[in-house]
Image (tube, rainbow, N blue to C red; front, side):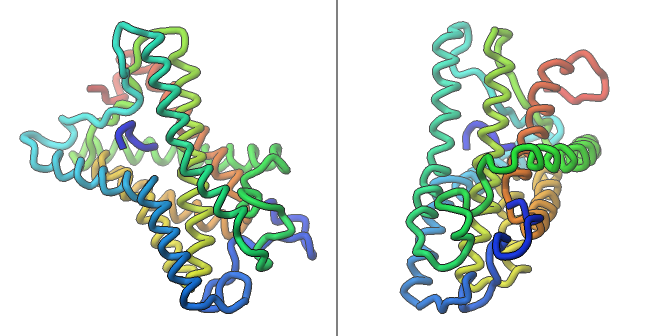
Length: 294
């Protein structure tokens, strides 16, 4: 989750999509990537990140430095998500909430456009244009959701325990997943925000970024490290625990994407994790003693 500021592989044979391509200087499709093409792809990737999660990573770093240099420990400070933009004016607040969710998805539309414009080079071309190349589609909703639920159960539970330990140890700020007014649209907006987070992060940080790094000649290990560290960077506003926990999550998600060749299950898993975090906090904050509040 970010703060508010800021292929099913089982079919086999010829119908089987490559996860993101074999890495190396020849690019993901085995076709030689020329130096001008590499420079163009590099600039494109930097621009996409600068318009999305790369900028969020820099913002989170600045926020973390601010928290470190502020009097008091990290656990005595709060990282707030999904706050109100117009307290006591619910319809205006709702308009701002929907505006923020919609505009945050614009980089995903840019990625879809860029993937559609890719030259046909054999990288998942059998799967269709745009986001279908990275397995973000509705071809396998059942398996995507089932896999996502299993991943969410494992990562969500362990992630909560890690957060509680990091916060208690003073390595993390107190995360406040929501501070919205008690209005009729609160839960739907929290769910929409969770889905938006999951789509933006998994499409860009896993599907798109790995595809580009493969074509740029990065080794699988380097691409895994780059994707995972980026994921951790834009959660640094939460503290060291948020950074480390999300780097580990990034490693698992990259491994699963390489195995399945689809970001669909990862989007489902991330959405379920955030929905439970956002809605669970809204329902439990102040009512249970084990949940830190600010």
